[in-house]
Amino acid sequence: MNKQELLDKIAKLEQSANQMNEPDKTFKLTDVSKIKIAIEGMAISDIAQKMQSIGLPKTQEMENSIHLATQATSSHTQRVDAFNKVYRIIKGAIGLAI
Image 1 (cartoon, one colour):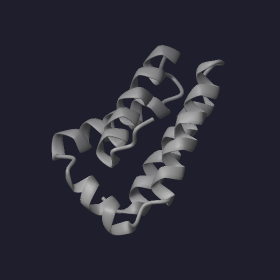
Image 2 (cartoon, rainbow, N blue to C red):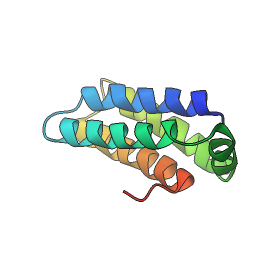
Image 3 (cartoon, rainbow, N blue to C red):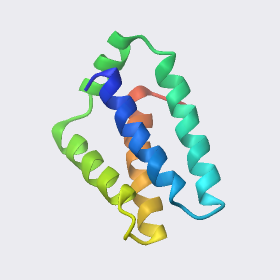
Image 4 (cartoon, rainbow, N blue to C red):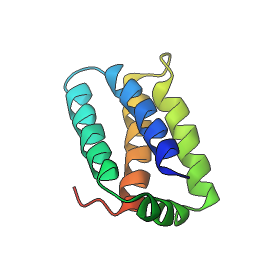
């Protein structure tokens, strides 16, 4: 996964956060902003190296969770849970200490 692919996934998370109810919407948009800032500050080679540490099952889990998080028909709780799962995977992979 390269930097642009990662930013695309984060953009999908941002879309799902915008569909949430308050106060979760504000908190999740803040989480997205923090992770975007961290990624923008990283070198492309660092991102590639860190993202390679995510195995295929985690990548598939992240894809599935992004899909669930962006489905408008999902319940609010399901969207929040799916968002949190993807956020934890990305945050753990890039070593973000937030």
